[in-house]
Amino acid sequence: MITPVEKPSIHVEPHIKESNYIRDLVFGFGDGVNTSLGIVAGVGGAEVAASFVILAALVGMFTGAKAMAVQNYLAVKSQREILESEIKREEFEIENVPEKERQEIEEIYQAKGFRGEELKNVVDKITSNKDVWLKTMLTEELGLNLDILGSPLKGALVMFGSFLLGGILPIIPYFIVKFGILSSASAIGIAIGISVISSFIVGAIKAHIAKKNWVKGGIEMAGLGTGIALIGYGIGSELNKSNIINAQIGVK
Image (cartoon, rainbow, N blue to C red; front, side, top):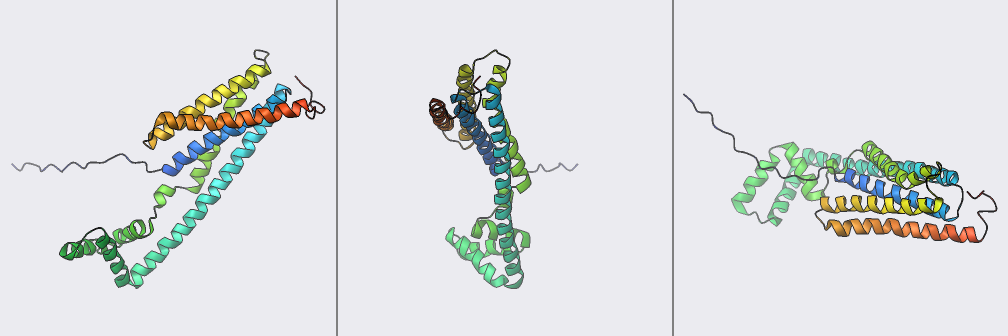
């Protein structure tokens, strides 16, 4: 009876393979919270009607989400086009000037400490498979990785959705104001509190994924949002004192 030979187990370490999508999620959410919070605090600081605060914040939220998504799409698309042109160039050189490309592989692994027969074996192994050869040239020589860069459309959708998710949070208290449960003054405080807490959570998650101090990451992101709110509130209050706003828009 033949005993089946067990295949050796392969140790696989977890790695972030879609770092750009995580970046889009964090930046989109953070920008959404900060944009809406700045508008809510600024317009709310002018003591205008809750309906106007909601309208201004929603317009800013959707406009900002669209702009961020489009810019992200164009940026990632441009990067991919540049990288794809580099890939085509490397493919052409492997096909047409293989000795030059082999020499480059040798130089790369010489720099890693390979010498003599060991170096020759490594180079022979890599250059025996054109797919491996190309991938090695891209990662080792040019530092390119299309998988990490991600899809332009997916990145845009992640940015758009996360921006809206973050952007709606500071507006929620003003919907409650419409039902007479909260005052406008209380709504501003609650909006700031919601934004600070949500920003802290996202900042902490981002730092944890990057294996950094999660408390520091949370405080950093929450602090940025609070700073924007204070600036917006100060501007709105000054406009209110100058009667620029109240002269044109009814106060609640």
